[in-house]
Length: 123
Image (cartoon, helix red, strand yellow):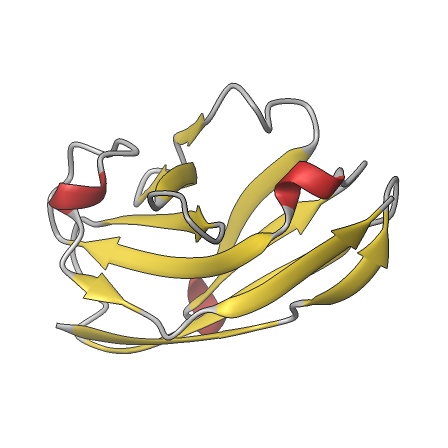
């Protein structure tokens, strides 16, 4: 498994921006899929964005046009740039990884998870 550590969360007003980072260590070679998930209080964890080892990206409809997932392979780091933030984006955000090359936002396909970083958006 891969070890994942998120950072970059915080509090921001609606319309603001944040950039989340996820540092990966351990087995990071070969084909993979990495993603960002979020979980708000009382709700299920949902997929936000994912990217595979070829750079192909997938986004949830709720964040398309506002969030951008990217990776720096040299630094083994995954990013999530979040713009035009809304109060409904408030959640704990988790980084996840899998060696399954068929990348999607299905939570069950990911087998490595970070501890999460909190994002709070006020109106």
